[in-house]
Image 1 (cartoon, rainbow, N blue to C red):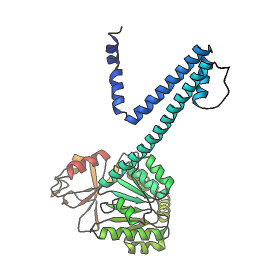
Image 2: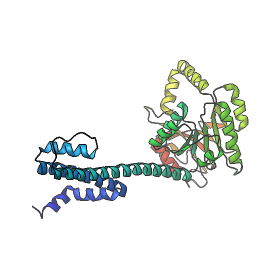
Image 3: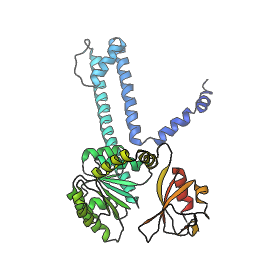
Image 4: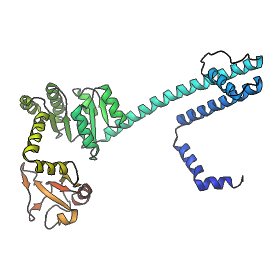
Length: 360
């Protein structure tokens, strides 16, 4: 039986799994696990010792060992002999020492893990480019984060509320703790490398200040940052635009327009909701940038067999030097480098389009 035991373990994969687990386990975690094992062994020794020395029932020995190690301070179950008291001293000193070691190492382990997670997130933010920065994690900011988590786009949240920061860290969301009005917090979030800045702050005065600060930081590096700001009062729209925002959105007005759309054009609203939120149709509307040297550049939609190749529809084409969209482009329209295509199709096909159709 002895010589067949390793073969049995190998067949079940236990030995490999155990070695793999130990290899992945950190030294601190191994020390804690070993200390717990020693503590359990000490409980077994205490139980057996009281049974042999005092002749107690095994459960009484276990109970005596437990109250000794935990320093609960109850009286002895029965009168102990001199040897029994010496044994109790040994159990108490050993148990308290091991318990203190476990508590210390657990505290160090938790603090170290938290610091490692924070440093990992900080390194992730430092490597981000062309990402999105969200200032404010209230109701609107939280909804934006939920939408972005499923999009695959990189982003970072700037928030000063400690409870919100704790929630973000628990969910492994890249975040910067601090006031968005602080220039250093914006720099830590990578505002000089970001594509867009979304301001979902509750006060318009704060939004204006953050917009001015972001424009001042990016102006020094000639970085083109697109700023979208929320306003609670449509009368402040012009002030926020003057401060440097590219687009100002009033959630109350958007909600009112949406309710009116549902009442007046319910079928159109249902269709747009399914498309924009990848509903039952399984479609997604996205924008695709045509880079220099891409296979699509310099060819018409018909020549590229766009619909057949990517199973997607080009809803509109935005030329680089024009602000207006060319809706429902004709088949003979030529696609040039720098154009932005508004595409409707399957998310996997849109990903393939970015990888194959518009990447040189």
